[in-house]
Length: 505
Image (cartoon, rainbow, N blue to C red; front, side):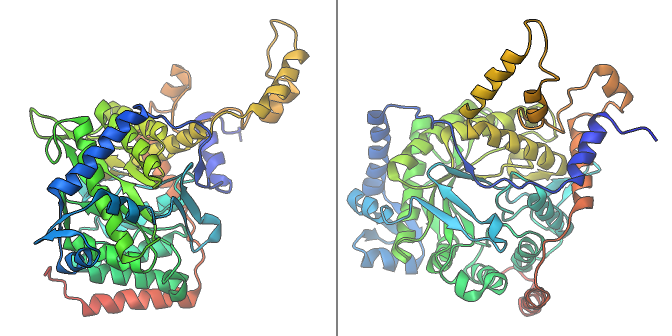
């Protein structure tokens, strides 16, 4: 039998070897500060002015009582915050924090120079492995949890990897949290769609990691979206109270549609979203000083001729770079979204939008990158093929973010001395020692000659992504979990499903 050669052999070699999971990225390249410090202070001053003069609504009686007790200027649900009070509160949030995973080897730190990558969030549709766009199911959710676990560059399993539309809304958080805890041993995100669902997610984390651990040790980072412009609603605030009380981290993320939910201005949008995010961070510090609070945003710009959200525009890069610079000024870890695309297919648009967005994110220095993989249709669709293609892109972004290794220079110079001018390096000792690690070798990007590609089936990126998704799921092995713990987790999930009505209240 002849040996396998070419792409098939490389793919087989990848899937046959043990996965080399990548720890959080500790960047070795500089941050990109897009404006001089004095201009950054102008944006900061504008945000503080909004909080002082316009204020922000906290539409929750309990939260309003907390602001009143803290001495804020409260009028109904409108809270006006003194800038010195805001700065005092956010100063108690840590500049970085660690999430404990159920497998300690997958525990991660973020903030400062540390970055974690996390899959896409919240899509009700999937583009499946037969190229059909359809409603997502629990089977899809489980598959994406397994893919996130298997992907070397994903440091977290994620949260709402897709919306399992075959599960009643009141039960979804139970099935999703169960899946994230069972099929991966990386850190996760909890449910935030009600106080009770947050509490139940936290209880399930406690079953697996220990209730005493989860009561005080950060094991998750969950999402709190501000309703731009200038509203924090009861649902999000209740989730913040639950997770903050247990020292769990939260992402304070205005859901920004530039030109629709913010002014039609890059710097104006940043001034508003920064005010919204800082108000959220400040509130979390009211609940529990020192609890991990992540500043940031999800951003799309709006096509003024249609109202459609757009990914991949240069203004999104500008916003991310400004928010990153502000985060370093506030000494807060920060979040943005990465491999985003408005495309409906895994096509050229999906590729260039996602890759260019991620490059801007890397230059901006985000610490928590949500929606790194699989994202299509401005967050409405999660793609199996794109999840795999983006995963490889994340490994390349990781390599880029590590920077250059100057220790390589002297051995390379010795290799130059070994050859004669006009010769090649292919057989040198240096090349033989370094050929596997010197340069990134992609598995899903085709670099073969046309004739080889033609003979091997003329596959495009979407085809290769689907094939890899099938292979990864076939190779998946469930991480070990104590039988008694799994039984308790399953029993709790099933018992809650039997007790909670399927009707949406």
